[in-house]
Length: 579
Image (cartoon, rainbow, N blue to C red; front, side, top):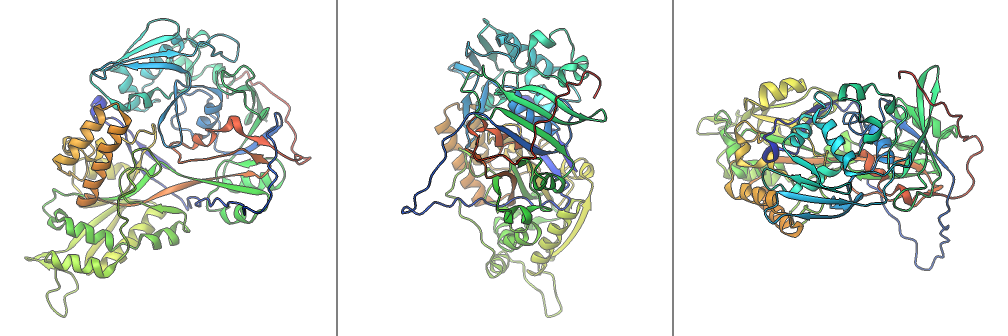
């Protein structure tokens, strides 16, 4: 179960990240893929990519609607929509914006006006030409999507003035400069000529969601149904795709409730791929000689917030104490024991593998001796032989750590408690519901320390402003109430600077200040695993900003060797009734 929290934003200055308190029920997050290079003396025959074939995948999740404006909370739908619908902007693997439907664009000198010119050769799957009217229509649907589209995305577009200048040119006018703007052009585009006579509520129940018309590399071919239940979706290669059409002719997706059932489908010869490999099947997947396992970093960061303004816990205001607390955490043991060695230890607040990540940050190693010395140097000592808790000026080193009330976070909290109690610090851990953690503790700043996960998805832009800028300390999402003018200035400059090199320098400087001050303790990033038959070639994967990003290079995938005889293309049923 995943609980998602939308930002309460003041348009662009407070827009971007969402806080995610994740209910991980036994989730083991992936492995780090090791690329083996063949010996230089070994001759390796690499098959030439061939057009054709059928790729069948076990997709873990449930079908709801094939509509990119309605898929924010359904990962399975987003994966198919990535194949069906094209976007103005996509991203390369480091998160740098990449033109998809856009041919050219220009930005005004003050950074508030964006003129976008579309490619003229983009066709919908029904042969109609995609125009700027389709983009404006899609944005209006996003604006009207209260309760369905995340509030921060919807409110963002309500305050951007959008005007079509021609069928191929569209203008966006912002109230103020906002460097991450291009990232917000990555939504899937809907066909106005098909849906234009519907309002948002009507679109939710539209037949379109069962028989979509998009402009992506794959087109909808039909549904697989059993007993009036949708069990799968069949897509075909879009021969009129404005880029090179995909090599694989047909994609068949079958829905499964969990990874174990998905693996069984592979073992039974029903599919060639598994969309999600979790802990329940990880070992079986690793030893299967016919499966290749692909792994990527997820856009998520587990960390510990400190309430730096809470006078009940004055020790958190000492930077050396915060550094001691991080040094005193055996994060590698946590990763090994709780995640079966399947997570990446974090060094800072910006995701590794992105263009803004600075790899010059020193990794903090587990060192109890150093942690103890730093705490002693800060004046927190044991008062006598029978004293078990450190104190300074009569204030005991004692505090409460809140955590999301689920099994994985409970285990993490217990290990954190054990590590810190070994330093003669008293830590009371308490699990609370996600809504209580947000509404009763983080938002009113009435907590001492909290273990949380930050969801850094929606867009690949690394903008960390909401959680760390001093303006956000009151009423915003700077839950630590970190008040650092220098760090805030770097974040604010990066938000209004459109030059990527200059932005990366601002973020590098911000990360250096974060390392020096350590207002929160970064713990680790989870990774995501999926698996495919070794017959599927041409697959590459970089850091994920959404699980659908695994299809980033789908046009280059191809199949080698004979397909198992019992994988057959299902008969098509195009559903015309309610789902």
